[in-house]
Image (cartoon, rainbow over all chains, first blue to last red; front, side):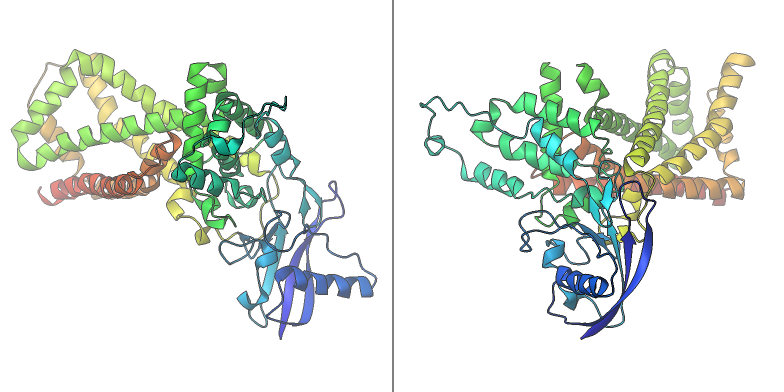
Length: 249
Length: 220
């Protein structure tokens, strides 16, 4: 069992200035997930008549992309290849002080406490992160189109992105290039996606710039912190796709 | 085409192109400087050629200056845009060392150190050269270059500044060289080999500049 000091960002709403507040939690089991530890804190706060800490979560099994905490200076905490809900308290020691902050980026404004607005990602997706399908009744069966194993694997790896925003949060420039690179790549690698490839990459990059994300300076931090291991190769692929699409007009 | 010129990816592509051009220039520069170690005459011949050849003086030199200015101006523009993207709220605790190198996180500072050195370098070498050729219009002396250069390295403070500047250049290149390839979309099965070559270049070339300065200091 562990006793911990938590330093948590509290902010009433989007307009509040916000501040770090210290809390103590006791008897935390090392088998708990990080979010379960947050639940314990919130129970404590509710019982004492205080406002619980607002934080995003949904599936709690690392697939939905909702949880989003910056823990001790790292997106999703000090472990690799996991989301915050998969982070376990065994990664910490009795007596530790844990700093918990929301994602920080102009394009991810804080709504309340540790919850940020990630609709900018949705708008990028809406700008081109899809394949238009003609459902006239004679649509070709996707399985009838031959695709190499290598391309299928690479597309699947890119499609593993859950859009949690850890790449933006950890980037010193708040760049969304890993997210957009993954979304562009998952289609660019497949024949079904190639029909709209040029418009897709131009529109998604344009929306990314409009949302106010920063420029990629290739530090590689996003790849390290990404819970799904999305590779930097996807950024290079997007750069190639964009440059060639733009040159074609 | 307008989209290409105004987008973040195009700006990074242009930054990478100018970087690769400057990296190539460094190779030429160090090659000529190295001659001063082996032969005073060979260094003078090469320097005289570079200083008097019209193609180099009136085509390559302006391109080089444009390349240098563009790289610095675009570097500052991208830094300002990135700071705006980060916003006013910074992390209370941010463990950058856990996922990226110091060089990659501090390119603006190593770049600023290099910019400062270039100003000193221009005041030390380039401005006196322009004055000699175009203001005072002194007669061509094909044998003056070696002594002019060696004399500069007799001052221990100048040698110290030179060494520190090239350490910053090495740090800048250690991230920048490979970063340029990534910005241009080159990330494939040859990347690991490229990376090893880029790292070797980033250490060897600044190392040679430092060696030449120290050699002339002790060879007075």
